[in-house]
Image 1 (cartoon, rainbow, N blue to C red):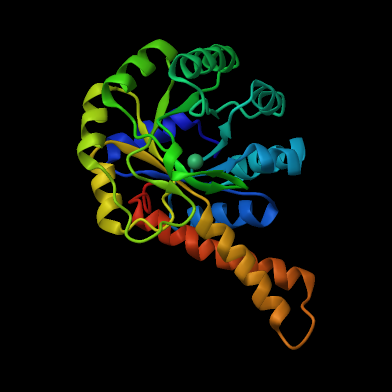
Image 2 (cartoon, rainbow, N blue to C red):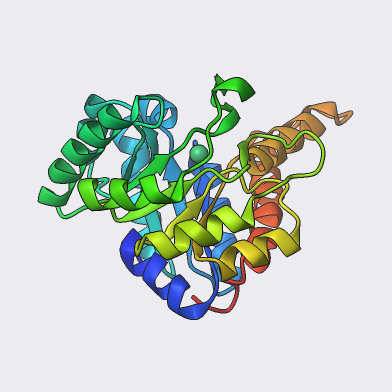
Length: 281
Ligand SMILES: [Zn+2]
């Protein structure tokens, strides 16, 4: 069943688990996430980056919404990292109301102004807004943020930001990165605890690909209700295609696609268990 981000995050917060939000780009991605969620009796979220929205347009949004409505478990559909009002308007027009307005590249005052504007627009349409404070390093869909540009979320500023913008969820930067971690991930849990005490909205952690179980558990204990996962699911898709093309006989198209769905589904299922949401759908 199609379920709002707010309802998913509230249930996660109360239930002591987190919802996995998986970036998808096509039918195979949608099928992998929904099939994994149904098999694990878990809630989950389908997430579209603006690049995916440009690639698939309203038909891809419609696909996500139809799949979510038909699912036997709660499924959210969410727009990820949107730095432009035009992208957010396009998403709203396509029927996608829960969005992430990302002004984290802007100076603080401009981030506040941009985010508040987007919150006003999205709330009018009955949607909700996740925003980010601080700046994440790493690479996602061709956008690379070098380490010297990274900033961790300041707890006092987070309280001011949430109060001024009226956002519904806050994405934190506590040492998490987009893409692959170079060496052991190191998360600043003291900072996360201080942010948790400073704000009342649910917290989101991007860059969950490669986080060990103990860190995931600790993050959930300290208020993280949503983890974003992209890299590992994409790698499973590409790996399955590569394997198919490497076979001695030329692959059948549907078999190839089905192989990719199964490969992605395995990754998603493992994450649903890791986030503690299996059995909660
Ligand atoms: Zn992200």
